[in-house]
Image 1 (cartoon, helix red, strand yellow):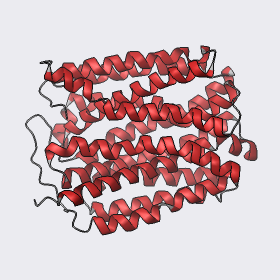
Image 2 (cartoon, one colour):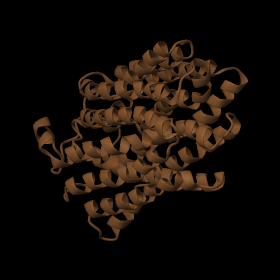
Image 3 (spheres, one colour):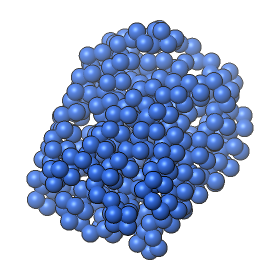
Length: 404
């Protein structure tokens, strides 16, 4: 297959970065405006948790099928339509006036956003040579952290200067620019993938379903997604309710710090394993060491509620978020190894199951915090889930697998 010119390759990678950035901006707008929306619509934590979970239920369900679709149709047009879909749903949230309307918008948003990672991974596998794929994956995946860093301050600024509805509409409309650039830059995007299957990967679905690491990664996704979903959805509410932070610029700064740490962890999370491998450690063992160290650091979230100052709180959050980003970097490399030929479908199925579990836990956080009058029971669960997710990966890993 003819590879795109280098300039086109990196332009496309830049667009994948921007798509992932928009993905996270659109999904985070609701959490950032939570205090205002809860007040206007008179929603307690339990009902707002149900509203947050709507996105993840539809996101998880859609991921189960979208990967299979993207493996078989034009990813160029499929990706463009997905972004138009989710951006329209995000903008429509700004004109919703009832709980039911907000719920419907979040469900539609989840359906559209489910295509982002399966599509981006598929695009990288088609236009980027194997030796450059880790760099390309890192570029586009860092868009999630960039979006998470930008959204809090931007959404809070728009909400305080005008109102929370303007933020949804403004961010949703950014997709029009992206789609125009994407269709122009991707006109020569190859329609098929010719990368041969490696000896250590499963190339057909019967083989994939017989592979222990597929099931281990699915279990890991089910345990780790609730942790990530909490940090990306409930932190503003936690700061306002448990730490008495006033909604405004200070809240935006506080929420931005852990996402900045998450981005740094994602960007550099693969380096420790690479150094261990170069020192002669087997790839599977190197990954296990890094995953274990990250899980141990994430367990410190148990002490979150006991932090006596905002400085101590943010320092602890920085460590936890950085560790989660590094953990995710190593986890994603394992997902990519299952099957390059079916990369969209495999990532979609694993992500979809994890999305369902995350959606349930997003709702459960609202109910638990309402009954417990605080988030301490939630932090106790967040302290142990990464350890079990790590065990699921380590115990089902295959020594012959390569670390990407």
